Image (cartoon, rainbow, N blue to C red; front, side, top):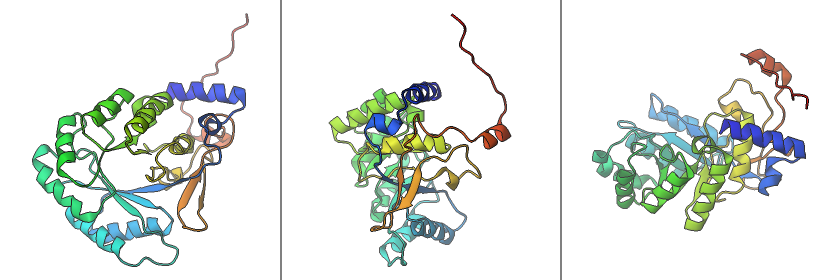
Length: 284
């Protein structure tokens, strides 16, 4: 994925063309979703989700696992059902289990239907597509796969086996932008919703995600929050973010400069540089 991105960037810069233009999404804004980890107390989790909603995130994904699922999700569902403060967006809620459960937990997972989640992400181990098919049969909540999907062929297999009804598209996990576009094309044919997932990218990688998100189902919000949400400093400026003046939802627009994004800033690049190699064109 990294090599493909480097080559794509070089070709696009040489052509003076942004990735968004190549994909046909120039200027198209997409809603940004936030991800919240586990907390020591349910009240603290609710406070953080409320903070993300106040920042304009229209979808908030929370991490769950055995011993940390029903109580926090019930509290969040109760909070979401109540009135929100001025300027606060009422976000859709998702839960991400990161493969923390087993087949013996399927009846327990079925109880999560009570919380009106947009989807339950990766409840079982990454290699257990048959188990995920059982979960999908039992739950009303849509099941989304993430870690299980490491190629476009695997996406097709998971959907065809009934292991998921929603797909989390991660170009870095799938092998690059090309495989991600292949998976997206399959999901369109299969009429399966797709949203873009993040992997702690810099603003450079976030620009790629925002551009790809412009091709995905507009009703599903991706993990395209600013890199500043988890990085103290970044190498590039990345996508442009702003709140919708009508809905208040935080939205992102992909970079409009040639390549995958702006060139890295010289100062931060020198600060964190570990090794540098200069490649020169050999004389003919």
